[in-house]
Image (tube, rainbow, N blue to C red; front, side, top):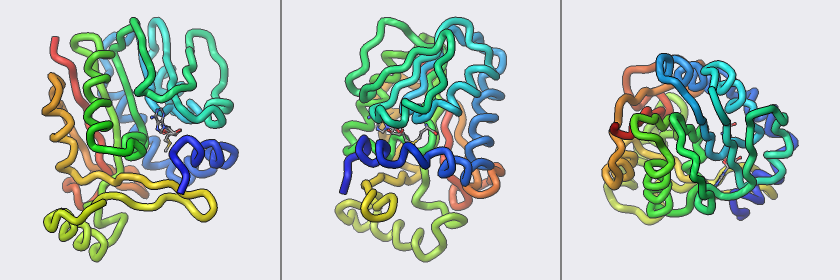
Length: 235
Ligand SMILES: C[S@@+](CC[C@H](N)C(=O)[O-])C[C@H]1O[C@@H](n2cnc3c(N)ncnc32)[C@H](O)[C@@H]1O
């Protein structure tokens, strides 16, 4: 089993077709971000786990970032696909090693990047780091896959996931991603995990939505979609 960096280094060449296969979902999330920061002035924007940067750069263009866009990813091969543009700074390192005196009005972390962090402590550390990196009043938007999403994973799997969670089965929420020989382990969230991270910080949950993984439509329950959250640092 590879770590996330080796997994994405291997996947980088075919990443674009992988992301095109989820285009409706990913576009719905991108549109949500642009719409929901409409009215906020964004001087600096940071995308954590930016991959090939296609989504970050499209979002940055649509929200008219006034100063700089920072893209971070620990896979050098993924970052080789980023188009170099004025005002865009690229950092090939793990978010956990990233230090910055620049503060951000908007931070994103898109398409289950958080599922690649190996422990709950690391995920909490991410939220603490985001709080340090946000300007007061700044926004953090992220999406994660949802192990209670019946529409995508099916009723039987979700029923088993709910049982595993309630029986405190070791490694509940951990799955294998990819095909042999390129595989990594990934954490698929439950809709309740996120509160454990937020409550360790000063961040405030402003909105969450459930987005259908095939169509990108907004759904009414967490049994029908993946999870997107908008979080704000208080003024
Ligand atoms: C599913 S891809 C998503 C890429 C991009 N956000 C998108 O939506 O197309 C997950 C990305 O997270 C990156 N990643 C995983 N762990 C990371 C870490 N600790 N620091 C920075 N990037 C990380 C991977 O290298 C990979 O590019």
